Structure formats: C-alpha cells, structure tokens
Amino acid sequence: MKRLFVVSAMAFTTALGCTQGTPGGPGTTSGSSKTGLGQAEDTFNLSVPVMSSSIQQGATTDAVIGIKRAKNFDSDVSLTFTDLPTGVTIDPASPKIKHGDSEAKISLKAGNDAPLGDFQVKVTGHPAKGSDALVDFKISVLAKDSFTLSVPRSSSALKQGKTLAVAIGVNRQKSFDQDVELKFLDLPTGVTLEPAVSVVKQGDKEARVLLTALDDAALGSFAIKVTGHPTTGADASSEFTLTVAKD
Image 1 (cartoon, one colour):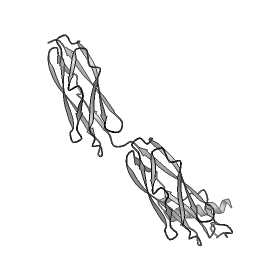
Image 2 (cartoon, helix red, strand yellow):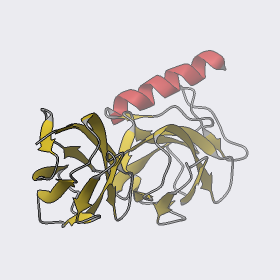
Image 3 (tube, rainbow, N blue to C red):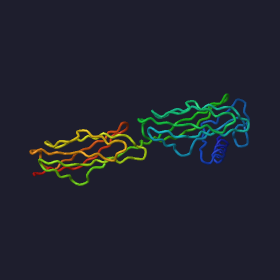
Image 4 (cartoon, rainbow, N blue to C red):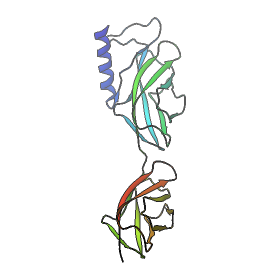
C-alpha cells in the first residue's frame, strides 16, 4: 500500500504542475476498488499553491484550491481551514468545490495587526460521503507598506539665542498614504520646538520645524530622537545630532 500511494501522489503532482498534491488522505468512499495507480476510483486529492502565499497586513490576496478526482468521484467537496494565524480570514468562509468544478477560488485577508511570519494552514476537503482529504497550505504574513523618516545627516548647529529650521522627511512605500505625526524627544535644556507636534499630511513629503535656543541653553552635542506615528500600523524613528554653541 505504501508504494502504491507514493506513485499516486507523484502522478497527481505532475498533472497539476504548479500546485502540490500531498494529501493526508486521499478521501475514500466506502466499498471503493483500487486502480492500477493505487488511487481508488471514487476518491480525490486536494492541491494548493506550491509556493507560500504571501499577504501583507491590511491587504487581500487570492488563492486557488484544486481537486484531482478519481474516475468515479463526482461529489461536491466542502473545504475547511484550520490553524489560520490570528487576524487572517478566508472569504468565502465555507468554500466548496462543486461536483463539476476542478477548483475553488478563495481570498485571504490579513488584518492590520496580524502576526508576521510563516504559517502552515491545514485544508480539509469533506465530500458528501466517504473520507476527508487533507493538504497543508503555507501562508506568509508580511509587514504592510510603511514608511521611514529622513533627518539631517550632519550635525545641525544652533547658537544660543538663535533659531534653526530643520526638515523631517517621510519616505513612503508604494501603498502607504497616511498622515504621520512627528514627536521630538531628548531636546537639550533651553531648546524649544515649534510646533511642539507636527503632522506630515498624506500628500506631503516633509515637515519643517523651528528649534530655538534660549540665551542660557545647554551647550554641547545632543542626539534628538524623532518618532513618526501613523494613523494605523507601527511607528518609525530616527535620530539627528543637534549641537548648541555660544553665539
């Protein structure tokens, strides 16, 4: 039996080409007779994409679950998905491969906070009668399109009693179109910021802020941390050096 099953699986994989057909079954109806390939005449195998299906947080991607029917198998097959990562859903929730069809199309949707990483989902095909068939479906959840901050590369010099304009840029990935709120931390004593909180609007590339050093502002070089907070998703941070000197 073991040798015959391997031959059946190999034949199934070759037939589908770009999909894998490594079932936990195959599904079998009662009283089935075996064919020369080691697959009962009234059974079936499921197939999923060979490569991991990648989906970004907050996005949707499509996938196809295929079926390879033996000679006398023409039943509908209901599909269920177990071990889906938190925040990932399937649409339709209860897909079915109709008796005259060779596949079912599904949509995978990942929430904004879906965990990142690679996951193995079990797909079970349940026929109207007989045994189920199983196959593993690999899903990769990727970080959603986000952004980075650009700050002055060289030290920004600010003299006591003076004001300095500093530009903070937002480098957006292709699908990122949110507003980004900027906050500045670790300002030296005696240095003020205007505006205290600034926002880079979705259509803008940068924001300019004014740093003012009081007459008695602390002297020296300081690492200023800038944090960008989007409407949804993870923050981005960067640092620039501010040097305060005597006038």
